[in-house]
Length: 285
Ligand code: C2E
Ligand code: MG
Ligand code: MG
Ligand code: MG
Image (cartoon, rainbow, N blue to C red; front, side):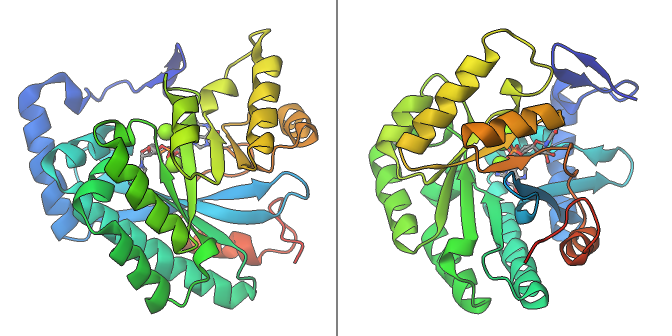
């Protein structure tokens, strides 16, 4: 079992790839090979409507199960992929797969308001023709544009705010949602809200997980109030207790996404969770 330290998970017995430069290069090589061999997959974590507990959507999360090293966290390999440029192809794969799954789930549930949120990195926005890729999957899978959301972190667009703002505006024109991920962890969070056309704010899990600071309720309440006043939907990440879920709901937070409700699921499990009538993740529709 991993032990916790200062909120970071320390995994024993497996030295981090980050530790040694040559290992990093080995990892990059392995990652490219894994991608070519279709060994990357997506997991889907339910995003729960706090109001009634139903699954409102999912976040698609990339997964790599290394044949020798076991599961490697995207926190470890996504930054490498960003550096090597492979993130472009990984991102296209994630978008395509997520869209395909969503269209299947729309079909089996008959509920096209179910949404899918896909993480996108800055490299994709700037380098790749992300907009045409998004248009392509919307058409190919006949998705209502609003059922697809792109998640971005703040670190994004620093280098090129003008271009980024233009590109993001075109994505919004397509009707696709735009979520500001990990809100509150960067120093420019508020500036981003003014500059870019986000419609959803995801409160970073550091505000919820192992956090019993006395200031916490005030900060959470302020974030929720601000987001509401700006007309944004709100997702709280990493909610740890039913009490927190209840108080966030009372504050007016729309959604929760955390292990409390469900861990990320494989596609079969996700489909079953959607169809289950009696599970804790029950749909009302
Ligand atoms: P993120 O986008 O903020 O995704 C949420 C992360 O929090 C996921 O980790 C999820 O498993 C984890 N999480 C959710 N609820 C809880 C909870 O209650 N407790 C704890 N301890 N963790 C929780 P994951 O899947 O390891 O992903 C890590 C990060 O990797 C993501 O953070 C995202 O920044 C990046 N990532 C994942 N998939 C992709 C992708 O397809 N493309 C890009 N560019 N980045 C990705
Ligand atoms: Mg995300
Ligand atoms: Mg996040
Ligand atoms: Mg994150």
